[in-house]
Length: 630
Image (cartoon, rainbow, N blue to C red; front, side, top):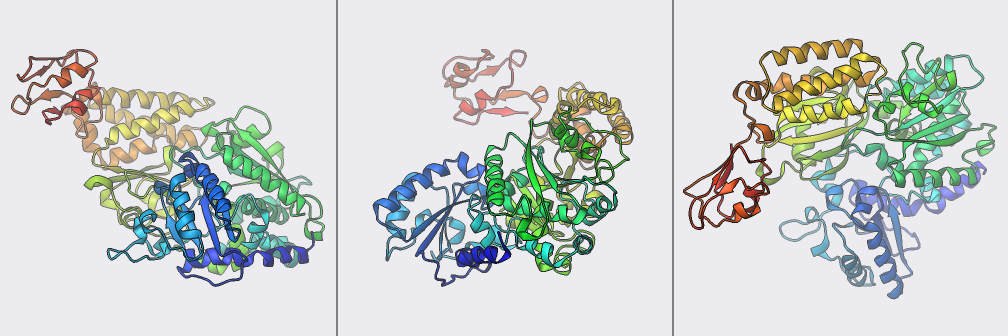
């Protein structure tokens, strides 16, 4: 493919994309001659697919065909972000945001909205787009979207990820064209350095510096790697980018290859992401077909190939040296550093490794400039950050905000607050390597340095919201169970330390804790952080240390009072029946699996605490609120 042919494709479908962007970014309709009266975009990401969005698309296609609507374009996209409302469908040019769609709803929309002269079906809209008077506002103006700034996610939910021409029309491969025709490798690296982009995989190392080190390394063979082994519980940022815009990663890797002198890239993605893997394979095949990967890209003489390597789901393979060992066909275990991968990495050759989100920022930096990117965010944390917002939050989903946005803005405005009138207690960031941010720090700006200062970390971008019903001792135990299970076992501090920490936490949650256990935890955590071989062991104590820092009273309460205020730790619970409220209906006794409840009809019942297994069935079956957990 020539540069002229690439431009022709870009211009051919440019207006299709502009119509979608106009609504999403400016909240305005755009009158463009696209050849279609309506465009219907349906989320085809994993979240909505699990809610049967494919059946919605099938019904939509059937209805459109039956109604003879040949001027309606149906597009299967990536994630729109508001996963709590999936399956999501958006009709352009109006920007009508339909939520929680079913095949029956799709048929209704086709018949009432998509037909000529049709009107928006208000009762099926995302209710956040309706005012109290029933007026429709652009979804870009809703609290969830208003404060977001989509850079890494710019094409997710906008293009058909399996259609390379839509990706090209949306700007993919335009930066590669610029780099190969108008920039030297040093120009590219200097632009990345000036942008201030830091790795979005957790450590936050400056991307430009990493590329500069690899370029300076002398070797005929160098490698470019993408870390798509997203292993944090509750994290789905990288997966969503691969599902919604795989070409942006391929393009960025080719740019990096040109900058450091590499001609081979590897994408290490976990096999648990079948949709992402499928779309990556399609994207690589299309990029080869269009001459954007392979030999003599765009006629410039530059060669670059990308291959996929599937990971088996080992969390430790998120560590760069373990990942490279796995690509080589060895057991995924970290190795000591130095030498660092930029000097001696994959197959002992100079290698750069960035995660998916980091790669997704490269195209905008090259096209819009380092000054533009560095003007967003904070002085030491440029750009935006994508978060997988989950847990006890109304708007579960994928969000991208400028660095420096406060936790309060994310929780209360974008996230819609805590459901059921509960109080915000903490936000867990950074996954098993991170920590908990308490309610007292809710106005903390979210950036690399601010989070480290309060005992947490950015991590890859998982953000789990906790409310007053969560036990912080149990939360730290949950993450220790994960890291203890995922430790590769190569070094003693991690292999033994995680298990010993878990034993101490289990002991406390079972009501067997002793006052000296807190000091033991702190001492053991200190040794692990100083002595473990890789970041898994070094950061494994973080969830425990941060919860002990801000919620020490809960640990002391578990140990000294044998009490769990959140009623989560079963061993510390006691179930009692209020004789005044109990009507003797016998429903609790009939449903008790261990026959721990006794009593006669119409008389107050009692619970034998020695027999009780604290399953909670009695509470869920009691109609009079007579049973309490204490």
